[in-house]
Amino acid sequence: MPLGSDWQLSTAFDWRDGLSDTMEYFINFNISHESSKFVQVHNRAKTGSATIGGAKIGIGGENWEIAVFGRNLFDEDSTPLATRWLDFGYGFAPRDIPFGALAAAGQSADTSGPRAFFIPLRRGRSFGAEAKFKF
Image (cartoon, rainbow, N blue to C red; front, top):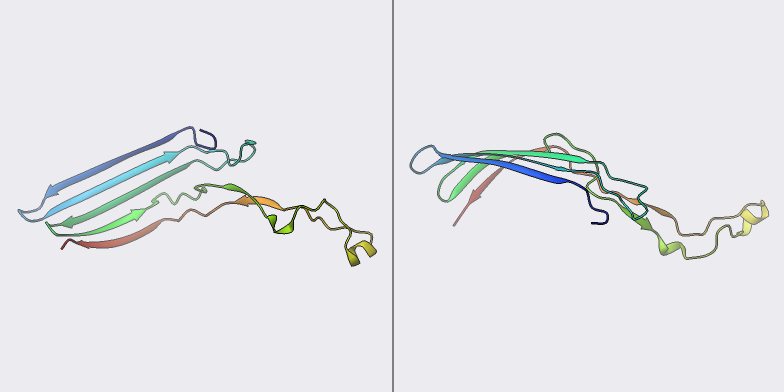
């Protein structure tokens, strides 16, 4: 697929076992990998490949669960996606138009639409706890 990564792999391990007749413990590990992908159709810029791991450990009963977890355990920092950005706010004027003081100084201003990449940051390593209750 255009702008998609060549490889995407994931696996998970989930173990649950009883502590008593009314309680159980659970352990979950998961890992995923995505190879780098092109940012635009010209194939000149790529995101990095990423390997993300997570884990969750807890105890629970029929109507409740308490757990601790970790996300992005390897602290992966490659961007999850990127896209080409074009600001139409500058209009479509030809390049290098002389303006007032610039023209007097023998210079001109570039009024074409600027282009750049929009690249969100990946959420870093995090840890937390959660409690769930069913009612």
